[in-house]
Length: 259
Ligand code: PGA
Image 1: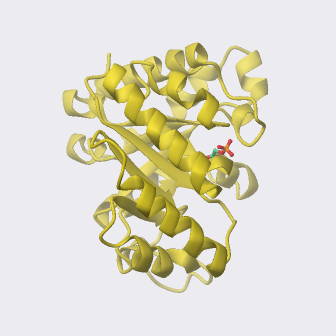
Image 2: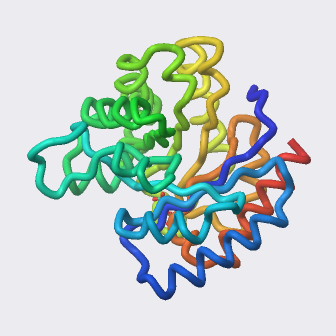
C-alpha cells in the first residue's frame, strides 16, 4: 500500500489553447490552487510555445508547469525538436513522456520513451512516464504484461536514485478522451501491480507518485483518488476548464484527508 498522502494533479492540455484563453485559464487555476489543501500539488503541461506564458502567469503560485514531450537528443541538427534544456529555460519542472498519443501517432517505442525520460532527468526535471493498454490488449488479458513492459523499459535505463525521481501515469488507452474512465477497482488493480514493479527496483522507487489518467472528471475523481495506490491524476479534457480542473484538485484534497 502506498505511504503517500500527498496527491498530485497534472493537467495535460494536449494541442489546445491560444494566448487569450490560456491567460484566463492559467489565472483562474493559479488563484484556485491557492485555496487548496497543502496535501495537493498541481501542475499543467502546456504546448511548448506557451511555456513562457505559463512561467509569467504561474510564477509565485502553487502551480508548477511543464511540457508534453521532449527530444531524445540534447541538442543539434534535429529540426522541429525541443530539448529538455530549453524547457528548463522557462522554469518548467515537469515533462510528460510516452503519452499514448505519441506512442500511437508518432510511433514512439518504449525504448525511445526511456531515452526521453533520461534526458528529462539529466535536465533536472521530473518525467511523467505514461503507460497504458489498448482495449484489445485488455480484452486479451495482457494488461499487466503491456504496462509492465512499458515501465520496465524505462526503469532498466535508470539508476535507483533516478528512478525515485520519476512520476508514473497509468492511462488505459480506451479511457482517454472517451468519457469512459476505468472503474476505481480496475485502476487500483493496475496501480497495485505497477507499485510492485516499482518496489522491485528499489525501496525508494516504490513510493513514486502513481497517477491515473483517462476521463477523470469532477464526478469520478474523488473515488479514484481514494484508492490506496492512486496518488493523483493526469487530466486531459477537464484540465481545459478551470472550474472542472480545480474541482478535481479539490477532490484530491478530500481523498488525501480520507486516505
Ligand atoms: P482525458 O485525457 O482526461 O481527456 O481522458 C487524459 C490524457 O490523455 O492524459
